[in-house]
Image (cartoon, rainbow, N blue to C red):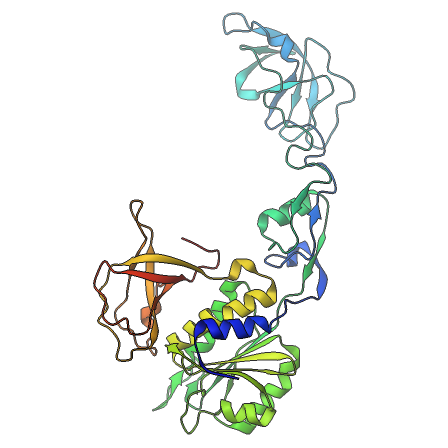
Length: 414
Protein backbone atom coordinates (compact mmCIF):
# COMPACT_ATOMS: atom_id res chain seq x y z
CA UNK A 1 0.00 0.00 0.00
CA UNK A 2 1.19 3.50 -0.83
CA UNK A 3 0.84 6.21 1.81
CA UNK A 4 0.85 9.95 1.11
CA UNK A 5 1.37 9.24 -2.56
CA UNK A 6 1.95 11.93 -5.16
CA UNK A 7 -0.68 12.22 -7.87
CA UNK A 8 1.66 10.64 -10.39
CA UNK A 9 2.55 7.70 -8.12
CA UNK A 10 -1.11 7.14 -7.26
CA UNK A 11 -2.13 7.03 -10.92
CA UNK A 12 0.79 4.78 -11.89
CA UNK A 13 -0.27 2.26 -9.27
CA UNK A 14 -4.00 2.38 -9.95
CA UNK A 15 -3.79 2.36 -13.74
CA UNK A 16 -1.32 -0.53 -13.72
CA UNK A 17 -3.93 -2.51 -11.77
CA UNK A 18 -6.90 -1.55 -13.96
CA UNK A 19 -7.98 -3.68 -16.91
CA UNK A 20 -10.49 -2.27 -19.42
CA UNK A 21 -13.91 -3.87 -19.33
CA UNK A 22 -13.99 -6.84 -21.71
CA UNK A 23 -17.64 -7.91 -21.71
CA UNK A 24 -19.73 -6.88 -24.70
CA UNK A 25 -23.44 -6.75 -25.43
CA UNK A 26 -25.71 -6.06 -28.37
CA UNK A 27 -27.60 -2.81 -27.87
CA UNK A 28 -30.43 -1.27 -29.93
CA UNK A 29 -29.29 2.02 -31.44
CA UNK A 30 -31.72 3.95 -29.25
CA UNK A 31 -29.86 2.70 -26.17
CA UNK A 32 -26.28 2.93 -27.45
CA UNK A 33 -25.58 6.68 -27.30
CA UNK A 34 -22.31 7.34 -25.49
CA UNK A 35 -21.27 3.70 -25.32
CA UNK A 36 -18.08 2.31 -26.87
CA UNK A 37 -18.05 0.24 -30.03
CA UNK A 38 -16.69 -3.25 -29.39
CA UNK A 39 -15.43 -3.71 -32.94
CA UNK A 40 -14.73 -1.82 -36.11
CA UNK A 41 -17.79 -1.07 -38.21
CA UNK A 42 -17.80 -1.08 -42.00
CA UNK A 43 -20.59 0.11 -44.23
CA UNK A 44 -22.91 -2.75 -45.16
CA UNK A 45 -24.26 -0.86 -48.17
CA UNK A 46 -23.64 2.26 -50.19
CA UNK A 47 -25.07 5.41 -48.65
CA UNK A 48 -27.06 6.75 -50.34
CA UNK A 49 -28.01 3.47 -52.07
CA UNK A 50 -28.81 5.20 -55.40
CA UNK A 51 -28.10 8.40 -57.32
CA UNK A 52 -30.58 10.98 -56.07
CA UNK A 53 -31.79 14.55 -56.27
CA UNK A 54 -30.81 17.02 -53.52
CA UNK A 55 -33.69 19.43 -54.29
CA UNK A 56 -37.17 19.79 -55.66
CA UNK A 57 -36.98 20.57 -59.35
CA UNK A 58 -36.51 18.82 -62.70
CA UNK A 59 -34.12 16.07 -63.73
CA UNK A 60 -32.88 16.52 -67.29
CA UNK A 61 -30.09 16.10 -69.83
CA UNK A 62 -27.40 18.76 -69.49
CA UNK A 63 -26.87 18.68 -73.24
CA UNK A 64 -30.43 19.92 -73.77
CA UNK A 65 -29.64 23.18 -71.97
CA UNK A 66 -26.65 24.34 -74.04
CA UNK A 67 -27.11 27.94 -75.10
CA UNK A 68 -30.10 28.53 -72.79
CA UNK A 69 -30.57 32.14 -71.66
CA UNK A 70 -33.34 34.34 -70.26
CA UNK A 71 -33.85 35.77 -73.74
CA UNK A 72 -33.79 32.37 -75.42
CA UNK A 73 -34.90 29.71 -72.92
CA UNK A 74 -34.88 26.02 -73.78
CA UNK A 75 -38.29 24.36 -73.83
CA UNK A 76 -38.46 20.79 -72.53
CA UNK A 77 -41.49 18.53 -72.31
CA UNK A 78 -42.50 17.46 -68.79
CA UNK A 79 -42.36 13.66 -68.82
CA UNK A 80 -44.02 13.14 -65.46
CA UNK A 81 -43.50 13.44 -61.73
CA UNK A 82 -41.35 11.30 -59.43
CA UNK A 83 -41.88 11.40 -55.69
CA UNK A 84 -39.42 10.30 -53.05
CA UNK A 85 -39.56 6.55 -52.55
CA UNK A 86 -40.53 5.80 -56.17
CA UNK A 87 -38.57 4.86 -59.29
CA UNK A 88 -39.18 6.24 -62.80
CA UNK A 89 -40.18 3.40 -65.13
CA UNK A 90 -38.04 4.25 -68.14
CA UNK A 91 -35.00 6.19 -69.29
CA UNK A 92 -35.43 9.93 -69.70
CA UNK A 93 -35.30 10.88 -73.39
CA UNK A 94 -33.57 13.93 -74.89
CA UNK A 95 -35.88 16.93 -74.85
CA UNK A 96 -37.63 15.70 -71.70
CA UNK A 97 -37.56 16.86 -68.10
CA UNK A 98 -38.85 14.89 -65.12
CA UNK A 99 -40.42 16.71 -62.18
CA UNK A 100 -38.55 15.26 -59.16
CA UNK A 101 -38.70 15.71 -55.41
CA UNK A 102 -35.88 16.02 -52.86
CA UNK A 103 -34.29 12.64 -52.16
CA UNK A 104 -35.89 10.83 -55.07
CA UNK A 105 -33.83 8.49 -57.27
CA UNK A 106 -32.48 10.14 -60.40
CA UNK A 107 -33.97 8.55 -63.51
CA UNK A 108 -31.83 6.69 -66.00
CA UNK A 109 -30.57 9.05 -68.68
CA UNK A 110 -30.65 12.24 -66.57
CA UNK A 111 -27.25 13.66 -65.67
CA UNK A 112 -28.25 16.80 -63.76
CA UNK A 113 -31.18 18.58 -62.17
CA UNK A 114 -32.34 22.19 -62.04
CA UNK A 115 -34.06 23.48 -58.88
CA UNK A 116 -37.70 24.42 -59.14
CA UNK A 117 -37.05 28.11 -58.48
CA UNK A 118 -34.63 28.29 -61.47
CA UNK A 119 -37.28 27.18 -63.97
CA UNK A 120 -40.66 28.28 -65.25
CA UNK A 121 -43.43 25.89 -66.14
CA UNK A 122 -45.55 26.62 -69.18
CA UNK A 123 -48.40 24.16 -69.54
CA UNK A 124 -46.92 20.74 -70.32
CA UNK A 125 -43.44 22.21 -70.81
CA UNK A 126 -40.75 23.70 -68.62
CA UNK A 127 -38.54 26.61 -69.67
CA UNK A 128 -34.83 26.53 -68.75
CA UNK A 129 -33.18 29.96 -68.90
CA UNK A 130 -29.54 28.98 -68.32
CA UNK A 131 -27.21 26.05 -69.08
CA UNK A 132 -27.18 23.31 -66.43
CA UNK A 133 -23.84 21.57 -66.07
CA UNK A 134 -23.41 17.79 -66.08
CA UNK A 135 -23.82 16.41 -62.55
CA UNK A 136 -25.01 19.77 -61.24
CA UNK A 137 -27.25 19.21 -58.19
CA UNK A 138 -26.58 15.47 -58.45
CA UNK A 139 -25.87 13.17 -55.50
CA UNK A 140 -24.09 9.95 -56.42
CA UNK A 141 -24.69 6.51 -54.98
CA UNK A 142 -22.15 5.92 -52.18
CA UNK A 143 -21.26 9.62 -52.05
CA UNK A 144 -21.59 9.59 -48.26
CA UNK A 145 -19.91 6.22 -47.69
CA UNK A 146 -19.26 3.19 -49.88
CA UNK A 147 -20.03 -0.42 -49.04
CA UNK A 148 -17.15 -2.01 -47.12
CA UNK A 149 -15.64 1.33 -46.13
CA UNK A 150 -14.51 1.65 -42.50
CA UNK A 151 -16.40 4.42 -40.78
CA UNK A 152 -16.01 3.60 -37.08
CA UNK A 153 -12.91 2.19 -35.42
CA UNK A 154 -13.14 -0.28 -32.56
CA UNK A 155 -13.18 1.60 -29.27
CA UNK A 156 -14.95 4.66 -30.68
CA UNK A 157 -17.59 6.33 -28.55
CA UNK A 158 -20.93 6.26 -30.32
CA UNK A 159 -22.33 9.74 -30.94
CA UNK A 160 -25.36 11.05 -32.82
CA UNK A 161 -23.55 10.98 -36.17
CA UNK A 162 -22.27 7.40 -35.93
CA UNK A 163 -25.68 6.16 -34.76
CA UNK A 164 -27.30 8.00 -37.67
CA UNK A 165 -24.93 6.30 -40.09
CA UNK A 166 -25.72 2.88 -38.61
CA UNK A 167 -29.41 3.61 -39.05
CA UNK A 168 -28.80 4.75 -42.66
CA UNK A 169 -27.27 1.33 -43.36
CA UNK A 170 -30.32 -0.44 -41.99
CA UNK A 171 -28.78 -1.59 -38.75
CA UNK A 172 -30.95 -1.55 -35.65
CA UNK A 173 -28.34 -2.62 -33.11
CA UNK A 174 -24.62 -2.43 -32.41
CA UNK A 175 -22.17 -4.40 -30.31
CA UNK A 176 -20.72 -2.32 -27.49
CA UNK A 177 -18.65 -2.79 -24.36
CA UNK A 178 -21.04 -3.01 -21.46
CA UNK A 179 -21.48 0.23 -19.53
CA UNK A 180 -19.94 0.54 -16.09
CA UNK A 181 -21.95 0.04 -12.94
CA UNK A 182 -21.02 2.76 -10.44
CA UNK A 183 -22.19 3.14 -6.87
CA UNK A 184 -22.10 6.27 -4.71
CA UNK A 185 -22.41 6.39 -0.91
CA UNK A 186 -22.38 9.53 1.22
CA UNK A 187 -21.50 8.90 4.84
CA UNK A 188 -22.23 11.09 7.86
CA UNK A 189 -24.69 11.45 10.73
CA UNK A 190 -25.02 15.11 9.81
CA UNK A 191 -26.48 14.52 6.34
CA UNK A 192 -30.12 15.52 5.86
CA UNK A 193 -32.29 14.66 2.83
CA UNK A 194 -33.55 17.50 0.64
CA UNK A 195 -36.96 19.02 1.28
CA UNK A 196 -36.88 18.23 4.99
CA UNK A 197 -36.37 20.73 7.85
CA UNK A 198 -32.73 21.22 8.76
CA UNK A 199 -32.06 20.50 12.41
CA UNK A 200 -29.26 22.23 14.35
CA UNK A 201 -25.86 20.81 13.45
CA UNK A 202 -27.12 19.11 10.29
CA UNK A 203 -26.39 19.85 6.61
CA UNK A 204 -28.04 18.89 3.36
CA UNK A 205 -26.38 16.22 1.25
CA UNK A 206 -24.98 18.23 -1.66
CA UNK A 207 -22.09 15.87 -2.41
CA UNK A 208 -24.33 13.05 -3.58
CA UNK A 209 -26.13 15.27 -6.07
CA UNK A 210 -22.94 16.99 -7.26
CA UNK A 211 -20.91 13.82 -7.86
CA UNK A 212 -23.81 11.91 -9.45
CA UNK A 213 -24.26 14.87 -11.80
CA UNK A 214 -20.55 14.94 -12.58
CA UNK A 215 -20.58 11.22 -13.37
CA UNK A 216 -23.48 11.92 -15.74
CA UNK A 217 -21.40 14.63 -17.41
CA UNK A 218 -18.67 12.03 -17.89
CA UNK A 219 -21.29 9.93 -19.67
CA UNK A 220 -21.94 7.43 -16.89
CA UNK A 221 -25.04 6.67 -14.92
CA UNK A 222 -24.76 5.68 -11.29
CA UNK A 223 -27.16 4.12 -8.89
CA UNK A 224 -29.14 6.52 -6.69
CA UNK A 225 -26.69 7.71 -4.01
CA UNK A 226 -27.04 6.02 -0.62
CA UNK A 227 -26.71 7.94 2.63
CA UNK A 228 -25.13 5.97 5.51
CA UNK A 229 -24.64 6.80 9.17
CA UNK A 230 -21.24 6.96 10.85
CA UNK A 231 -21.56 3.34 11.95
CA UNK A 232 -18.79 0.95 10.80
CA UNK A 233 -20.93 -2.19 11.05
CA UNK A 234 -23.87 -0.64 9.18
CA UNK A 235 -21.66 0.84 6.46
CA UNK A 236 -19.69 -2.40 6.06
CA UNK A 237 -22.92 -4.37 5.71
CA UNK A 238 -24.33 -2.03 3.06
CA UNK A 239 -21.09 -2.01 1.06
CA UNK A 240 -20.75 -5.80 1.23
CA UNK A 241 -24.31 -6.21 -0.03
CA UNK A 242 -23.90 -4.04 -3.11
CA UNK A 243 -20.24 -4.33 -4.13
CA UNK A 244 -20.62 -7.44 -6.33
CA UNK A 245 -23.03 -5.61 -8.64
CA UNK A 246 -20.59 -2.73 -9.19
CA UNK A 247 -17.40 -1.99 -11.06
CA UNK A 248 -16.56 1.04 -8.89
CA UNK A 249 -17.87 2.29 -5.56
CA UNK A 250 -17.26 5.91 -4.57
CA UNK A 251 -17.81 6.88 -0.96
CA UNK A 252 -17.80 10.46 0.30
CA UNK A 253 -16.97 11.49 3.87
CA UNK A 254 -15.67 9.78 7.04
CA UNK A 255 -12.21 9.20 5.58
CA UNK A 256 -10.01 11.49 7.70
CA UNK A 257 -8.64 10.81 11.19
CA UNK A 258 -11.49 11.95 13.43
CA UNK A 259 -13.29 9.75 15.94
CA UNK A 260 -16.18 9.17 13.54
CA UNK A 261 -14.17 8.82 10.35
CA UNK A 262 -15.14 5.21 9.91
CA UNK A 263 -13.92 4.14 6.48
CA UNK A 264 -10.65 2.75 7.80
CA UNK A 265 -12.64 0.55 10.20
CA UNK A 266 -14.98 -0.45 7.36
CA UNK A 267 -12.00 -1.56 5.27
CA UNK A 268 -10.73 -3.61 8.21
CA UNK A 269 -14.12 -5.29 8.75
CA UNK A 270 -14.45 -6.20 5.08
CA UNK A 271 -10.77 -7.08 4.69
CA UNK A 272 -10.44 -4.67 1.77
CA UNK A 273 -7.09 -4.87 0.01
CA UNK A 274 -5.70 -1.38 0.60
CA UNK A 275 -3.94 0.31 -2.30
CA UNK A 276 -3.61 3.95 -1.26
CA UNK A 277 -3.94 5.86 1.99
CA UNK A 278 -3.83 9.66 1.88
CA UNK A 279 -2.48 11.76 -0.97
CA UNK A 280 0.38 14.26 -1.05
CA UNK A 281 -1.62 17.21 -2.36
CA UNK A 282 -4.45 19.46 -1.28
CA UNK A 283 -7.38 19.50 -1.31
CA UNK A 284 -8.23 15.83 -1.05
CA UNK A 285 -5.28 14.53 0.96
CA UNK A 286 -7.80 12.62 3.10
CA UNK A 287 -8.27 9.62 0.81
CA UNK A 288 -8.46 5.85 0.91
CA UNK A 289 -8.58 3.38 -1.94
CA UNK A 290 -8.72 -0.39 -2.11
CA UNK A 291 -10.23 -3.46 -3.75
CA UNK A 292 -12.94 -5.74 -2.43
CA UNK A 293 -13.69 -8.92 -4.37
CA UNK A 294 -12.08 -7.35 -7.43
CA UNK A 295 -14.10 -4.13 -7.22
CA UNK A 296 -12.37 -0.85 -6.49
CA UNK A 297 -13.55 1.47 -3.74
CA UNK A 298 -12.59 5.16 -3.78
CA UNK A 299 -13.14 6.96 -0.47
CA UNK A 300 -13.19 10.74 -0.92
CA UNK A 301 -13.21 13.61 1.53
CA UNK A 302 -16.56 14.99 2.61
CA UNK A 303 -15.48 18.54 1.77
CA UNK A 304 -17.17 19.36 -1.55
CA UNK A 305 -14.22 20.77 -3.47
CA UNK A 306 -11.86 18.16 -2.06
CA UNK A 307 -14.25 15.41 -3.16
CA UNK A 308 -14.57 16.84 -6.65
CA UNK A 309 -10.83 17.48 -7.08
CA UNK A 310 -9.91 13.94 -6.04
CA UNK A 311 -12.54 12.44 -8.31
CA UNK A 312 -11.24 14.49 -11.25
CA UNK A 313 -7.57 13.81 -10.60
CA UNK A 314 -7.59 10.20 -9.40
CA UNK A 315 -10.92 8.46 -10.05
CA UNK A 316 -11.56 9.93 -13.50
CA UNK A 317 -8.42 8.49 -15.19
CA UNK A 318 -9.25 5.08 -13.72
CA UNK A 319 -12.83 5.32 -15.00
CA UNK A 320 -11.49 6.34 -18.42
CA UNK A 321 -9.27 3.25 -18.69
CA UNK A 322 -11.85 0.88 -17.21
CA UNK A 323 -14.57 2.05 -19.62
CA UNK A 324 -12.25 2.36 -22.67
CA UNK A 325 -13.11 6.05 -22.86
CA UNK A 326 -9.98 7.79 -24.12
CA UNK A 327 -11.99 10.99 -24.52
CA UNK A 328 -12.49 11.07 -20.76
CA UNK A 329 -8.80 11.59 -19.99
CA UNK A 330 -8.10 15.10 -18.78
CA UNK A 331 -6.13 17.55 -20.91
CA UNK A 332 -3.39 19.75 -19.48
CA UNK A 333 -2.31 23.17 -20.68
CA UNK A 334 -0.27 26.25 -19.81
CA UNK A 335 -2.13 29.40 -18.89
CA UNK A 336 -1.53 32.92 -17.63
CA UNK A 337 -2.91 33.79 -14.21
CA UNK A 338 -5.22 36.82 -14.28
CA UNK A 339 -5.99 36.77 -10.56
CA UNK A 340 -3.26 37.08 -7.93
CA UNK A 341 -2.98 34.14 -5.54
CA UNK A 342 -1.94 35.02 -1.98
CA UNK A 343 -0.46 31.61 -1.24
CA UNK A 344 -1.66 28.87 1.06
CA UNK A 345 -0.91 28.02 4.66
CA UNK A 346 0.58 24.69 3.66
CA UNK A 347 3.61 24.29 1.41
CA UNK A 348 2.12 21.16 -0.17
CA UNK A 349 1.23 20.82 -3.81
CA UNK A 350 -2.17 22.40 -4.30
CA UNK A 351 -4.95 22.46 -6.86
CA UNK A 352 -7.09 25.59 -7.19
CA UNK A 353 -10.41 25.88 -8.96
CA UNK A 354 -10.26 28.23 -11.94
CA UNK A 355 -12.02 29.61 -14.98
CA UNK A 356 -10.05 29.13 -18.18
CA UNK A 357 -10.72 31.26 -21.27
CA UNK A 358 -9.10 31.43 -24.69
CA UNK A 359 -6.67 34.24 -25.31
CA UNK A 360 -7.88 37.05 -27.56
CA UNK A 361 -4.69 36.66 -29.60
CA UNK A 362 -2.12 33.92 -30.10
CA UNK A 363 -0.97 33.87 -26.50
CA UNK A 364 -1.66 31.44 -23.71
CA UNK A 365 -5.19 31.12 -22.40
CA UNK A 366 -6.02 33.11 -19.29
CA UNK A 367 -7.19 31.66 -16.00
CA UNK A 368 -9.01 33.58 -13.27
CA UNK A 369 -9.56 32.36 -9.73
CA UNK A 370 -12.82 32.70 -7.81
CA UNK A 371 -12.85 34.20 -4.36
CA UNK A 372 -12.13 31.66 -1.62
CA UNK A 373 -10.03 28.50 -1.88
CA UNK A 374 -11.33 26.52 1.07
CA UNK A 375 -12.00 22.85 0.28
CA UNK A 376 -15.38 23.15 1.97
CA UNK A 377 -16.67 25.93 -0.29
CA UNK A 378 -19.09 24.78 -2.97
CA UNK A 379 -20.53 27.98 -4.41
CA UNK A 380 -17.19 29.19 -5.78
CA UNK A 381 -17.04 26.10 -8.00
CA UNK A 382 -19.73 27.65 -10.19
CA UNK A 383 -18.41 28.37 -13.67
CA UNK A 384 -15.05 26.72 -13.03
CA UNK A 385 -13.68 24.55 -15.82
CA UNK A 386 -10.13 23.79 -14.73
CA UNK A 387 -7.84 23.06 -11.80
CA UNK A 388 -4.69 25.14 -11.41
CA UNK A 389 -1.79 22.85 -10.46
CA UNK A 390 0.59 24.61 -8.06
CA UNK A 391 3.84 22.87 -7.19
CA UNK A 392 4.79 22.33 -3.57
CA UNK A 393 6.25 25.53 -2.11
CA UNK A 394 4.90 27.72 -4.92
CA UNK A 395 3.79 30.44 -2.49
CA UNK A 396 2.05 33.62 -3.62
CA UNK A 397 1.64 34.23 -7.36
CA UNK A 398 1.12 37.60 -9.10
CA UNK A 399 -1.04 38.37 -12.12
CA UNK A 400 0.76 37.28 -15.26
CA UNK A 401 2.37 34.21 -13.71
CA UNK A 402 2.46 31.17 -15.96
CA UNK A 403 0.71 28.16 -14.44
CA UNK A 404 -0.24 24.60 -15.34
CA UNK A 405 -3.92 23.76 -15.55
CA UNK A 406 -5.92 20.55 -15.71
CA UNK A 407 -8.94 21.07 -17.94
CA UNK A 408 -12.20 19.60 -16.66
CA UNK A 409 -14.01 19.45 -19.99
CA UNK A 410 -14.90 15.90 -21.04
CA UNK A 411 -14.06 16.46 -24.72
CA UNK A 412 -10.56 17.83 -24.23
CA UNK A 413 -9.07 21.23 -24.90
CA UNK A 414 -10.82 24.60 -25.04
